[in-house]
Every structure is written in C-alpha cells, then in structure tokens.
Length: 331
Image 1 (cartoon, one colour):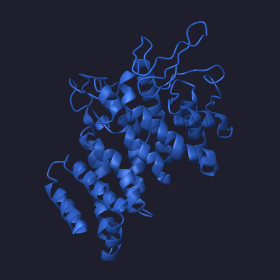
Image 2 (cartoon, rainbow, N blue to C red; image 1 turned 120 degrees about the horizontal axis):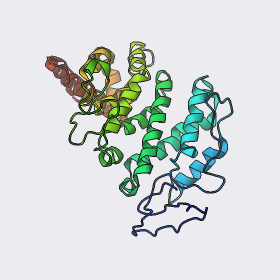
Image 3 (cartoon, rainbow, N blue to C red; image 1 turned 30 degrees about the vertical axis):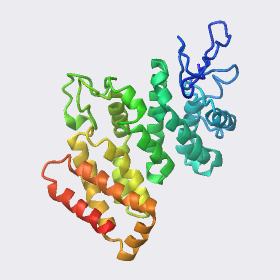
Image 4 (cartoon, helix red, strand yellow; image 1 turned 180 degrees about the horizontal axis):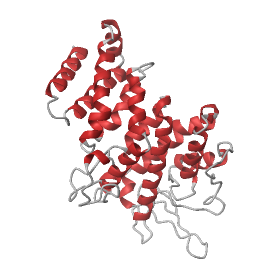
C-alpha cells in the first residue's frame, strides 16, 4: 500500500503480489487512497535499523523518500519499515551518540524530507480519503517524531521544532479527522489525577482528540517538558526565533495541558521569557520590528505565553503585562 496525494495514487498489492489498478483522480475505490502505504518489490521492507544500529544514515532510503514526496503524484511511505519510519529510527540512533550532527544527509532529512512528509500527512486534504490503518501508521510515525524531538530538544534544531508544531496543532487536518479517537493514556472514567499526567482531553465525549493527548503525554513521559524547562533556564543563545520555535507547540495545546504541568514547567518559563524580551534595547527592538518574520515571532511568543498564563487562576496581571509588552513592541 502507498500513501498517496490528493484523491488518487494509491498502490496496493493483492495477495498474489500483483499490483492493483490505481484509481484515477476523482474516482472512489474500495481500496481508496492511502497515505504512505505503497510497497513495491524491494522497497517495502528495506534497511530497517536494529535498536543498537551503528550504521551510517541510510542514503538509499533517503533518496527513495525524496523521490516519492517530490512527485506530482506524491507518496509518503508511512507503513512499518517503510522509508519514513526507517529514516526517523536511523536519526534517533545517530542522535544517541550525537553522530547526527556530523551527518549531512541526516541534517538534510531534518530540513527537507521530514518536514515535507509531515506537512503532507498532517495537513493535506487527501487525509480525508485514507483508511484507518494508514491513519494509525501516521500516528505511529508521530510517536517516533516526538521521541526524536525530545532527544534533540537541547540542541536548538528549529526544523524539528517546526515539525513538532505541526504534530501538536489540534486544528490540523489529521487531528481534526481523528478527533473522536479515544485517549489511551487518559481513558474515559479512569479517574487519573492531573498530577500523574501531562495532558488530558478537554471533552471526553466530543472531539476528544485522544491521539493528540497521548502524543503530549508521550512527550512528557520521555522527559520533554523537563528538557524544555532546562533549555530556557540555560539562557545562552536564546534568540527570538528560537524562543518562538520552542514555545509555539505548547501555546497551541494549552487547553489540553494539565494545571500541574503548566505550573511546574511553563510558569517558570513565563518568568524567563519577558525578562529576555525586556532586556532587548530599543535599537534591538527596532531591528526586530523591521524584520517582518522576527516581528511575527515576537508577537507569536507573547500570544503563546498569554494562552498558557490564562490557564492558571489569578494570572490576570501576567496576561496584562504581556499584552502591554506586545503593544510596546509594535508601537
């Protein structure tokens, strides 16, 4: 099976190994378009990496992925042991020894293949035409992405943080389509206290977005929130674009974060960020304001901080001060 773009291009193999006909654009089929599922002979299994793999980054897999996602009839290979999962696993293994930093193909994967792949499987309208097993495979790849991001969180890899922003966007096409998926980490009627989880559904009976909740909890269980706090406490080289990249994913999911999570990890961050912004000189602020993307980043940082602060009782003054600072910048 192959993940496909738009309303067409899905290739599946039947039981005898023969390739089923590809539906034409606009046609529906019992086999339907599926993201990432196409397995061609010699491509599907491919070089999977063992848990202790020390091999180099799989260049052949990277070339295949680049070819598939850049085609006008793009395909994102999301099935187990296909290119996307294999490459993320390889990157994770390299990260454990910090070898990914020296691997140009791995760095290019962060910047290009990973970003393009997740943009397509999370935001394209074709998401609506894919079967459940493909959506489940996408979710599994999101779990691997979270693991990779946590490993790299202290190294300021903005392309990975941008992908995390996509994965944690409650309004993306993927999470909207799967909004009724139930949470495994915080099941209905589980009575798990807020102190024991990092996130929980806003509403258990409508648009639960359980997969999103589980991804946030996975991030926390892997040490992601602690690593995020430590990165802010180490204030060195905290530029405006980096602060934006670090805080934006969590401003998006503020409604899902439990109060203990916000109090423990984000309230200290909300004390650090205004201090950094306030230390910018008038000349620096003017330079930031002239750069449209950086100006948007400052506004985005303040918006995320306000959303997180508003979740905590009696933080009206914090929210007010953040708004005053925003007005000061755009003045």
